[in-house]
Image (tube, rainbow, N blue to C red):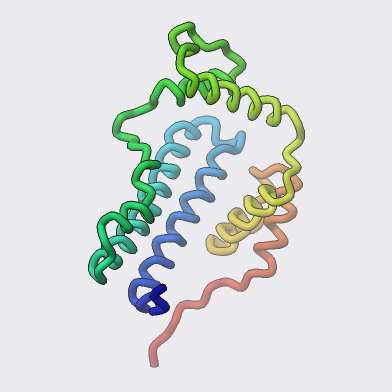
Length: 190
């Protein structure tokens, strides 16, 4: 196993891209809030695809480096998990529509019922819909959301805005996160 560390320029480029993707993920969460009713469809799709595209750029940057340093095409494809790639350009598929039908409490059309994948996606959607009826209390998920919102609030220096759009429990945690973070200082050259 190769123990050569990642080259510093590549490491920094990846850190920059991942930071950008995380900010897009935070915005996806932000646009799900009730005060964003007029823009949620457009903005959640923009930011979710921006985050996915940015993480794809991370994977391709690393893959190009691995290719450059002699990784075999077979190993590279294995690491990239190319069989799992869903291409958005093809648009929504029947299993996506089946999942949404389950989330919305709708029955599947007969044709969709014929495919096992559609039935599984529909069942998954129904399960998620049931879970949505319970309070949002998964501590790990709430903490992750609070960290993202708190970080963004600190970066924008708008911690007070947290109280206006988040559920109180998440807003309180996000405020704590923002309060312990120092505002980033720009590097100066001497």
